[in-house]
Length: 327
Image 1 (spheres, rainbow, N blue to C red):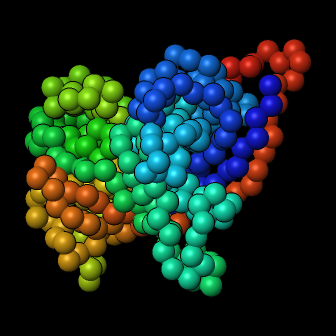
Image 2: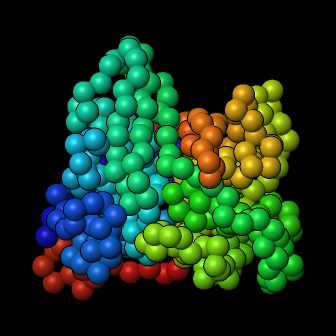
């Protein structure tokens, strides 16, 4: 077994791109369901977990698109399985598609990279000047508030939690409400309460969607309110997703979910920009691209950078072909 990968990071969060993995289904959503229990899951474990990856690794398998309307599809994966959405991955794929020539691009303008993901069709708008990438805008599926003010008893007291959809279902609350601040020093405590809230609300009725493949809480977003810039609200967040994985970036689909919530509360208008920082100090900017009957179409901007390429192989007699996790 040998697999070649191209590794990127978006605002500090890794994204390992893999081509040639066999998946089955007529749509990316169907391919995800098949992959969860199929051969692709063994490849995920091989490339994601230790000793070839780590508990916070993230990546995607390139697939055919659902139809001719997209450039390609992708199955996003992490240490616990396959996710339905990934904004930081979409930004990385936009850069990868342009720089590798997979999608013909304008060296002095905007190129749209259209990608089918399990939650729908998204776009990466790659903006370049002189051949250099200046900005990549992740245009997400419709994002909306599912339920606000869910009262929950936790190990850190009573809290009010909101459920939002941004391609995946997120629970969100202020870090201060559980006596924390979004800083690296608090990572262990943030992971613990993030996991607790995720599993407490995973079966909540509002987390069960019409398409059951999207149901369940994917992650918990804890945020600090940093006030306002001249352009709009300024917040810092950490997204604890899957089962205790920490997003180093401000989380693309999580940022989209926060845009939907702030739009619903009136804290973010069409004329404003959300400045969204991560736990490691990196930043996304986000805005309301348009309003829909149920919510908004968010746009999240950031940059991705190539880390390198690798060739992974299973050596004869290796006792750890499936990898392992210590979390």
